[in-house]
Image: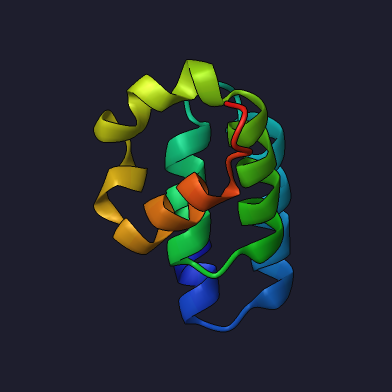
Length: 88
């Protein structure tokens, strides 16, 4: 739905879908895939929220990178790695 809302230029629907995804799909099990979807669909608010969650839970999520949709988007993976504080 996010992709369709973005494709057809429905900003209000993009916002509604972002809010739904933020509430329902940003847990440890699906935040990486939600991050990839947000990036690919230019949902910047959702992307930033997901990045914050991933950075906060980096140690838990790092082993899951290769199996997630994030691994299919090299520029997002690079951005994510650069967002991680050095002490992790």
